Image 1 (tube, rainbow, N blue to C red):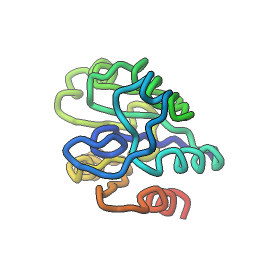
Image 2: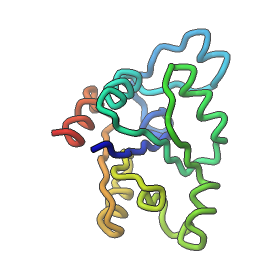
Image 3: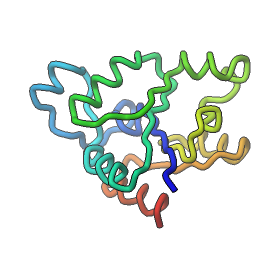
Image 4: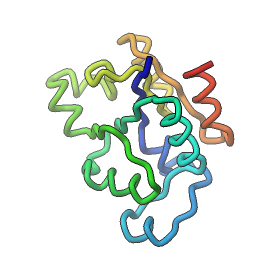
Length: 149
């Protein structure tokens, strides 16, 4: 049965404080977005699509959903839903300020992030997480093996 996963952006799919190799930036990426995606993102998203796994982006940044869509579109990736900090806060109300991510509010089965703090929230609020390391060169397969065994 298909299920839904979400990905954090900063330091998970987009380098920030944490540094990792990125996908090649061609003309489309340069025209449509100012950021790059982590190397292996394109391959992973295709593998998830083949397995009929729905992909959402769930970030606590204030990037607009239209910008995030353009960024992913420039790489040929089409997430089903974009959740930014504004949508998170609006959906969760007061609780939105006390928890950085709450995937159950958006019918998300698994959340992929770089932050051990999100894993702690997952344990506390009963949602599944996969934490990826910046130095895991095979991070896509790490995720796939945990999702599909």
